[in-house]
Length: 394
Ligand SMILES: *Cc1c(COP(=O)(O)O)cnc(C)c1O
Image (tube, rainbow, N blue to C red; front, side, top):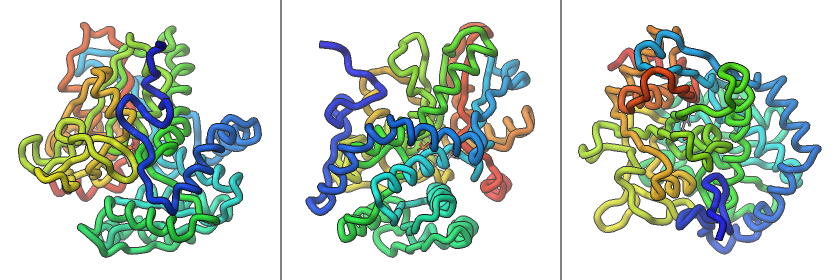
């Protein structure tokens, strides 16, 4: 039997992870999406429209920048993939625009989404403003209070922000509320999921929309290094979308080392962590069989990290499978290490990274390279303007 690709699911599963465990009420519209998404994103019309918006509106291709001073410090040839330079400040806009275009092609006028820190909510609200679609964003009440600037941005873009006052009033319950709304309004609503998580086909759909990152890397590396593959890829993992986009076209090439940085919060053994690949156990969360942070009696546990964008108690099925198969190395980075790495990139290269991305930067100090010649690509998933106060507080 041919070995399964790490990038794409078979029957909705990546190894033993994935699937679509959803309530009866949404099985119909999920099935509609499962049946149509590959045809839509493979069609010439979609590809042309998506490509044109990524180029002229988002600002792609994003630069691949040789970081000279960081390279000297870490003994490698370090290239930064600058997703922080995208419109709205992170990679999330690639996915949001792609899903809004799919919604329109499926004849759905209403787009809903969940958001934690507000980054995905802003990206979806932006895509909906651009395409003239109706937008409703579910956000935990605690996050609405904490992420005031993003709430105002979403409202300014014309989205309705629904404050979810359930559970711990953060991302996980915002997802549940969005799914519940979808169950009640399946016919005209499209659910735009914000990361490579959720029931099939979302992990695959999001990974394919973000795969533009590794597609660009191939051409950019060939031009800059004479070879279209790096020796090592490094990305941060929350749900897994920027990492999925970074590794997509390299996942089955075992010559390319893959390092994923997850948020250890106050430490792997502190009880206050978001290091799901280290500490999670198999379970079903938001429609997918993945690794989930759980209490001893199997309830979904709260995740903790200083980084709002990595604060999710699960991780996408593609990454769970790569981790289980030993295809990637998982590095746990705690709050302090991430903050220090963010300052370091700022001082050595003049780039203030999002704290999420700073976790990937911190991984540079935790892996060994082969004597200075290794070509390493690190995805700077977002910019740190939103995090300046958090950096200063530490
Ligand atoms: C949301 C976010 C992440 C984490 O999400 P993934 O789906 O794992 O990529 C990482 N970096 C930034 C800047 C983000 O906004």
